[in-house]
Image 1 (cartoon, one colour):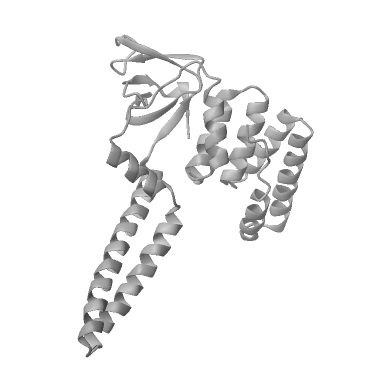
Image 2: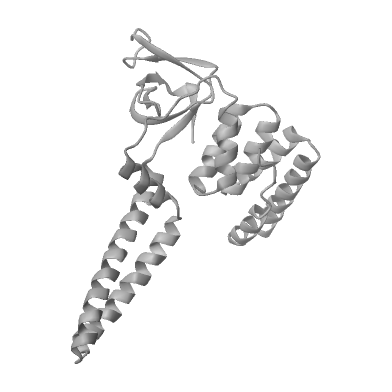
Length: 257
């Protein structure tokens, strides 16, 4: 387990706290510092309460969720460790510590759900897009777009054939890279906004073929499993597992990420 407390979350909170009252920001900073100290002295339950207090004030960061997940992991609560690691991963999808601890926590739950394999190109493209942040793709897209404008202007204004030819082809390359990286960024943004998922928190849940108590039982999932939410009808939600299995469960049996 990656056991190091993510201390730079405090810096993030200090910056954000400029937007709120001095009294509240002081309480939040004190709570984060206190929670870290409690964690380091193995007072995990008290640390959990402190981290949850900070989150309840409207502050969130991947570091806070990571620390909270670590505290739950130390308490032996793999389900809530997974929930908070998933929330940390949603905010920082490229954080290796978050990914490592999430996979470690998953070894402690009952269900070992194996994801359906992606095709070679699809897997490669997903890895490429997720290898960088939304901000990285956005900045690269803007930078290459302005490069395109400069090169295209050079193409129009230059009277030298060799320069015009080079400027033309490099401008084509620049606008192509700009379009591709813009697509990468919007794809990641769309996934973050529209990607609805949850963690099963009930000890065991019967998954039904229809949104009804009398529906045919398809299979059972246990606490700690991460599911995708594909539909909702009343207090029932349709879930999809990484292995492709689908069905209906009561919404109260899970907590959304």
